[in-house]
Length: 156
Ligand code: FES
Image 1 (cartoon, rainbow, N blue to C red):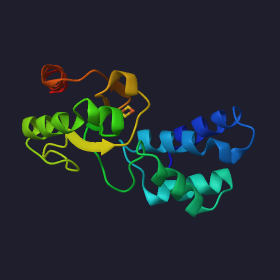
Image 2 (cartoon, rainbow, N blue to C red):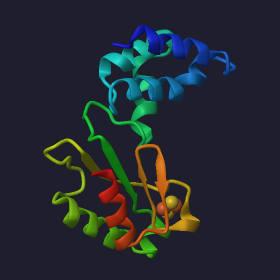
Image 3 (cartoon, protein in one colour):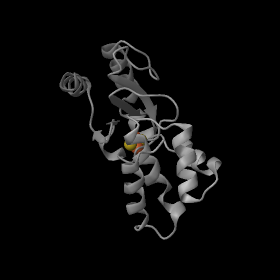
């Protein structure tokens, strides 16, 4: 359920859009942030009601973008490694394998302490600095093993 604070934030955001349904991505962002990094069906239904959309439309928007996590909680640090063409050509597979080794888990898993979730995603629009990944809201680019090790050390 969206908090009064989240509803207030969403109402304020509506003024930026030509129509209510155009605010669906911002509404999902607000709901996900409030819920600690993932979306619940209940929150999406509530968004549908506020934006006067069908629940299936809100669900479709959330399911299309990898930045939204539906139903499944993620760790405090959600690591999303791009594995699309530019990143693949620049070594994304090696980056992913290194990450799995260092974190001791497979892609798609969350560490037992709920600190890290490792995912792979399609192009994040930073192809010129491949290989790259997104951790929560931040991009990390031109990755190599040393950079990853340092980033993970700083996250622990
Ligand atoms: S292919 Fe990785 S950011 Fe575009």
